[in-house]
Image (cartoon, rainbow, N blue to C red; front, side):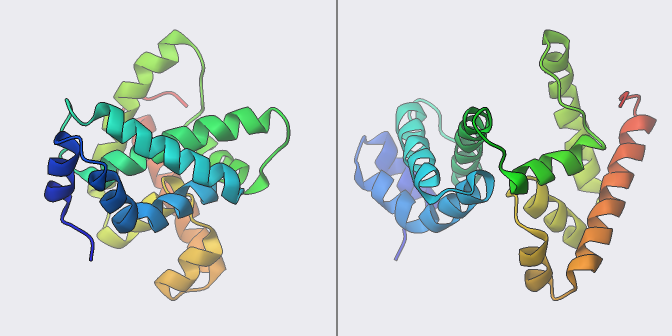
Length: 187
């Protein structure tokens, strides 16, 4: 049985490797699924998850995250996205590219310094937008665009057709685009 998050953090603060083992037992499956959704390659996904565990080990302490799973999944997602972009130079991963392309309708990606400054502002606006959604829509949005779950996985999980999920996602993206425009974010 997996330990509670506070106990896992206590183990990490005590520099006990049991903290990593317990974190793997509790969150390993979800971490590998997240990384696998982004990368489409089990070996790369496993490496990114292991790198994320090392990242947690190296940053806790001194940090004590308020939410261990959010902290861990954020590191997994960042490591996986970095690996994805490195791999993308060699070939395209159509699944994750599709997720990125869907969001590009609302949120263009940028590489400049000005874009980095705007990213912080955009993150705050996204939080406001997500907070305005009904729980089911918020879960749908996050599962698709944060965890990169496929439309077919979401359809099964939510008990609806894939086309209905696609339509809801389209409408959510459209709402996001209109919300951002209303807030003065130029798309």
